[in-house]
Amino acid sequence: MLRRLYDWTMLQAAKPHALAILALVSFIESSVFPIPPDVLLIPMILAQRERAFWIALVCTVASVAGGFFGYLIGWGLYESVGVPILNFYGYLEKFTEFQAMYNDNGAWIVFFAGLTPFPYKVITIASGVTSLDPVVFGLASVASRGLRFFILAGLLWYWGPWIKGFIDRYFGWLTLAFFVLLIGGFALLKVL
Image 1 (cartoon, rainbow, N blue to C red):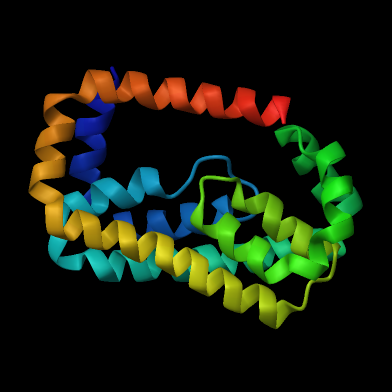
Image 2: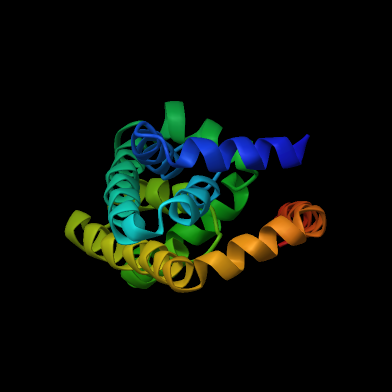
């Protein structure tokens, strides 16, 4: 079943509407959606390597715009929207501790979280709740999300055929490793 989903995604990645879907997923992932845009970004670049950097740019712009939406959730809707989202991800208690030191290191926090698999939506909402300077937030978001997506695009552009062959050859093992890491990551976050 997952193999068929992968094959279907690869076919869809080359279609004209794929870029709009990537932009939408990138936007909502930065504020409320749990699945990172990489799940679409990777197959799209593998399907259209010549457009790798354009795809990364669309993903970056949409992600930063979505980050500002998350910022607005934190700034204006923290009690009614932000708290339920943080509760959903199990971050509410840790968020209170985190909020105290946030503004002192806000630019670095936004930058490093934007590069990592850490749920970026937590950072965007936190930035709004703590009223981190929006210019600082925006610059750190552009730098981190841009680096993340453009580095990935560059790697896929350069090694795309090899990576696609590797994925095709070891799809079952890669799927297993992905789910082990995903479940392990959520378990680790609960413990921390």
